[in-house]
Length: 75
Image (cartoon, rainbow, N blue to C red; front, side, top):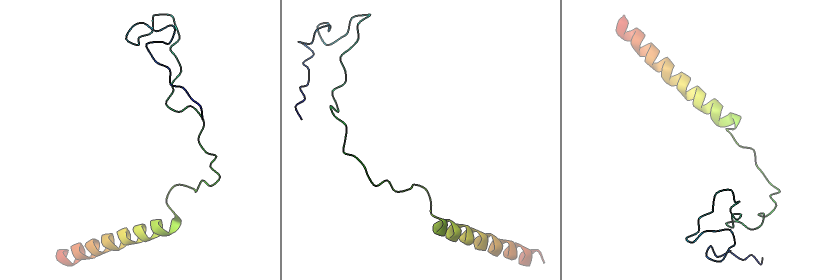
């Protein structure tokens, strides 16, 4: 990789201090001169069915417990 970071003091079209005069295109960004490596493995994102079933099941059990507790107190 032979990328040269332009010096704002020597780049044509820039005002002293690095500003760009009106009507002129600023120099391109130099933070990432080339594309990154090719990604061949992109796993799926999101929740799997197993953890969702377990979480929903626990929520139903907790709700059933409090419903039964409320019914016992009401009688």
